[in-house]
Amino acid sequence: MKQSYKLMESYPELLIFSTTRNGGVSMGNYASMNVCDYCGDNAAHVKKNREIVCEQYGIALDKLILPRQTHGAKVVEIDEHYFTMSEHEQNVLLQGVDAMVTSMSEVCLGIQTADCVPVLFYDPKQHAVGVAHCGWRGTVARLAALTALEMHDRFGCAFHDIRVIVGPSISVGSYEVGEELIEAFEEAEFPIGLLFKRNPKTLRHYLDLWSGVIWQLKQIGIPEEHIEQSGVCTFKNSEQWFSARVLGIRSGRILSGMMLR
Image (cartoon, rainbow, N blue to C red):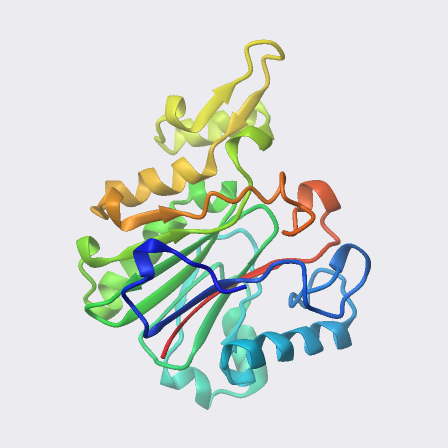
């Protein structure tokens, strides 16, 4: 499903999208558009779904780059050298990777989520993109900021030029968490009052990942007006978007991708 973001409307050279649950061949909790190959889905279905996505968006199958995410803070650059590697070497490089950057055209970087936050970056001046998978661990580790820093270091991107999309993911009203997460964010020096909401009746705490991502990006100099939220809560809209909190871990994943034409 090609997304429409006001922030990106003036950049026809940029492909940006997030897949919904519809349009694929997977079944059950993977129904039907799941392209993740490490969440328990049928391998043949995953392969077919990737082919469908690539055909729909005009992506060469070997240029769809999907890392093996582990809720870490590792960022890698996809460059010309990557495409000289063997398949085994490519797989090794992408193990434990939760963010990628590139300045290459016709290479689609993809992040797979099911409640975690896909964060998508574009610098129209340096013609570079980045993607990051930010669950609570990635947010605590400031992975979104690290991805922008990688774009700065690799491609000379100025922070005030970077545009950012915060994609479909769980909203604060649906993300109940324990006290230990408050402690983790407090130790990482996040503004607790901004990120956590407390239900006065149940006394339960809720985490606002969207605010956590946006706060850290503003801290490094990305203007708030250069950040746009999709506003889509995957938990509340699990019929259309995969949500691990609704479906369980053994379910499909949303693919959020960016590619320079």
